[in-house]
Amino acid sequence: MDKGRRTFLTHAVLASSALAAAKSVSAQNGREYRRVAVEETFTIPEVLDAFRELVEREPDREPGLTAPPYVLTDTIQALYDLGDDRIAAMDAARIDKQVLSLWSPGVQVFDPELGTELAQLVNDRLAEAIRQHPDRFAGLAAVATQDPRHAAQEIDRAASVLGLNGVLINSHTNGEYLDDSKFWPIFEAAQALGMPIYLHPRTPPVQMYDAFADYSMDGALWGFAAETSLHAVRLLMSGVFDEFPELTIVLGHMGEGLPYWLDRLDKVSARPGMPQLQRLPSEYFRSNFVITTSAMFWDPVLLFCRSVLGAERIMFAVDSPFAPSEPATRWMDAAPVSDAEKRKIYQENAEAIFSL
Image 1 (cartoon, rainbow, N blue to C red):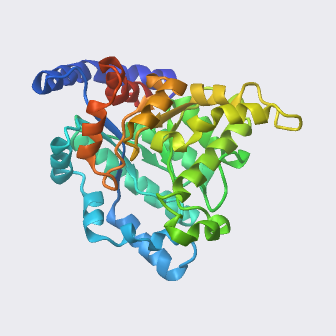
Image 2 (cartoon, rainbow, N blue to C red):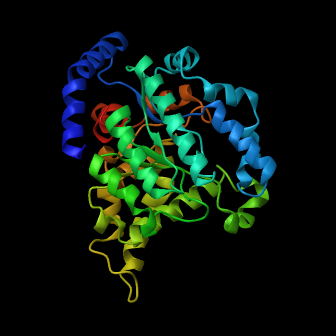
């Protein structure tokens, strides 16, 4: 199914119900927008069991899998829940809809055959949860990037059969990055189907890990952003967006620091000997990237990103259950931006990007 047909069918089926839901929510809550959170995590027992088996068999394969969140019972139970408890937590935080995605590193850490099998299982479970709660959940497909051909096929199935809203990729694949043309069937499928790719953090690969291991820098403190921003710059500088001009990449955590760096990228990329691109890195970023607020609930960074990108390139996200939802909505409600901009950040941008 091509992008135009998918967009038409999505809008034809959902437009009237989405409008009615938006009006109902507005009337109920006294506001003119819905709160949509777009980086909200889940997992299934089969994936966690496979993680544990991998750690026992190859403890150095993915160092981050031995970190505390992977063994904390309360966190695991929150990740498993795709029903009443999750919805109750959303209600308490005044969140109308979550865009769900599989917990990092997803299925990318496994051998290709197992990763492909688990991706299909995850996506089937996700689609079923959305069918049960269509007003509260949407979803991003998991794919086994270590097998690009099957990953592209799964993107097609996710869009055309399951009705999912995009793809989430947990950054590197065994230390390799998506600028390598062997991964481009994934981009071909995503662009053709209008499926945005959320490029989510992952623990730095083994060959980089030692530099991040001290002081707990391998995860959310620094390693996640450093590794994911590296990946994004590789995409910017490799010509990916000359080849796939309609591709949309979503970055969490207010763009993993890259909005601050855009002017520097433009100036340095203009020096002799740099890759020859059709546009400036900042132009690709403004046209092909969208960022989210996940776990970055701070006025100065929101205002800076708005000044660089515009409110239309920012979406609301929490990063639950690893960041608390209620402080996130309380912050966004009080943020020093206009009501029209809040409507874009909370609702309209997500609806446009993910065809909600």
